[in-house]
Image (tube, rainbow, N blue to C red; front, side, top):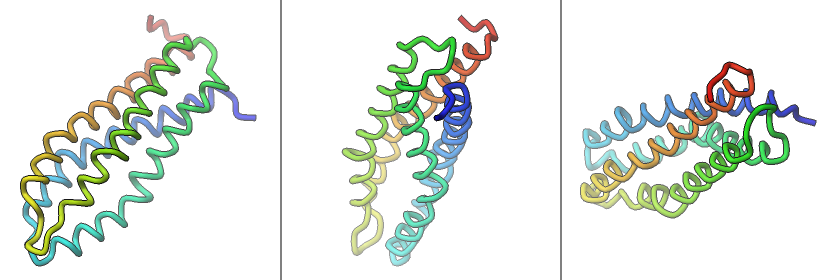
Length: 153
C-alpha cells in the first residue's frame, strides 16, 4: 500500500512542477500564439495540443489522483480539512478545464487563423486556472511542512 507521507511528498513535488508549467504557459506560451500567422495557426495549435499530453496533462492528472488518494491515505499531522480543501481545489480545476478552458481552446481556430476575441477571453479567464494550480501547490507545501513537523500552524 501507498504510505501517506510518500503520497503527500510525491503529490507536492508534482504540484510545484505544475505551478511552474502553468505560469510558463500563461506568461509565455499563450502570449506567443498571437504571433503565429493565420495560415499556420491550425497546424501550430494542433502540434501544441499533442505536445502537452506528457508534460502538462499527465502530471496534472497525477496531482488530482494524489489529492484524492490522500482521503484514504492521509499523511500524519495533516488535518482532514486541508485534504478536503485540496480535493475541492482539484475538482474546481478539473471542472473548469473540462467545462470552460478546454472547450474554449478547442474553439480558437477559424479558417482565417486564431479568433482574437476567444483568445482574449482565454488570456483573461485562464488566470483563475493559474490561481487554482498555485493555491493547491501552496496548500500541498503547507501540508508537507506540517507532516514533517516543521511547526507551520
